[in-house]
Length: 245
Ligand SMILES: NC(=O)c1ccc[n+]([C@@H]2O[C@H](COP(=O)([O-])OP(=O)(O)OC[C@H]3O[C@@H](n4cnc5c(N)ncnc54)[C@H](O)[C@@H]3O)[C@@H](O)[C@H]2O)c1
Image 1 (tube, rainbow, N blue to C red):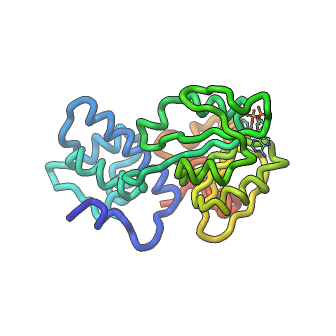
Image 2: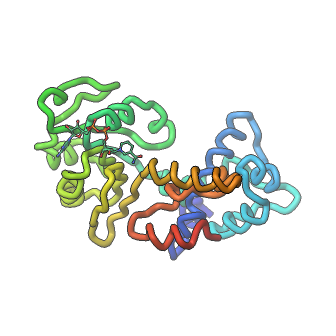
Image 3: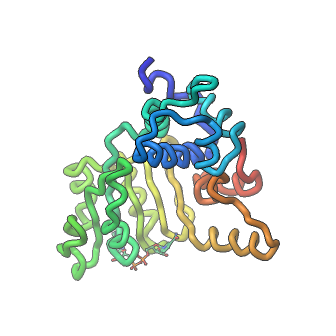
């Protein structure tokens, strides 16, 4: 069966499972880089920092069971996970806001190797428009719709002040983008069918501080962080529920 046929569960996977799948993917990539063809569930679980039973349960949700005593074919499982995570699609990312954060993200070369092409960097500041950052030239956010259309951007990163984030977010949605990652420290509203995720380092640091004062190790590699499980619409519920499944 083709990976795409099996890897799309009818109901969406829980956020905590999705976060762990990305960890398995990273571990599998490093097995592949080391020339490993097959990996046991114990070895993959150890490399991912989860228990074998959690790993087997997560992978069984994709229909990828592996073979008892033989383990998983690394390349095959990589394909399944990539398909389940939507990474076989062509993701074209536009970063809106070319300040400190936007520029740092645009300069980072690691997105391309993980399936995300940064295709545009936009700002409204005349001092910044036209500057070359990495391999991109900053374009005028006044022309956001045209830039998104020309570059066929289908994912947006908002690295903007909170005060303008909602209005820019609305324009991004109107331009047809359905996947948005926001760094702006504010609550944003998006219509149904649009996935908005928010990155909040201050929240992460607060969680770290909480675990530190209790002398706990907290959520390490196998336990997705609050940010990893943080789709804004489910923020409060997720925080009370903690990592699930
Ligand atoms: N979530 C986190 O962990 C985290 C970490 C750092 C910063 N931030 C937030 O990310 C945002 C960016 O941070 P920064 O340090 O890069 O700020 P910055 O002030 O250096 O950059 C913001 C950029 O947005 C541009 N801008 C303003 N209005 C715009 C618009 N309508 N369209 C396009 N561009 C516009 C500005 O010209 C500026 O270049 C801030 O809201 C900050 O609070 C979040």
